[in-house]
Length: 94
Image 1 (cartoon, rainbow, N blue to C red):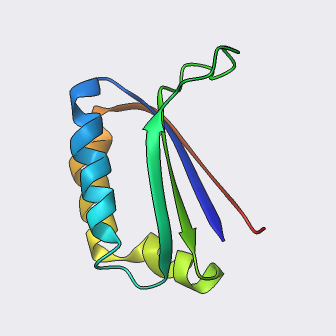
Image 2 (spheres, helix red, strand yellow):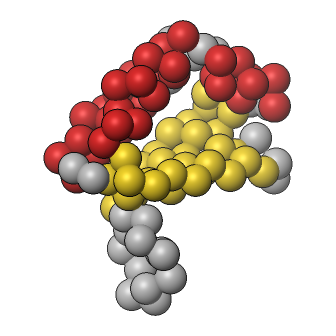
């Protein structure tokens, strides 16, 4: 199960701390098999204002569902969403 999140920030200085904290969630949330993140880097210009992204790969949909309601995930949302201008999450199975 792939979980892709696109973000743009009101304060881009919050991007690095958010991505570090999301990396730490791998130690706390069962079923995350990989994590990557980065800044938008394509010359196409099709990002529609989104400047950063992260991807979690979960073992399965049940692991993703557990992450969505995990208290540490909720804490990160409370801490960082005030600094986010826009966000979209998209999940798919491969």
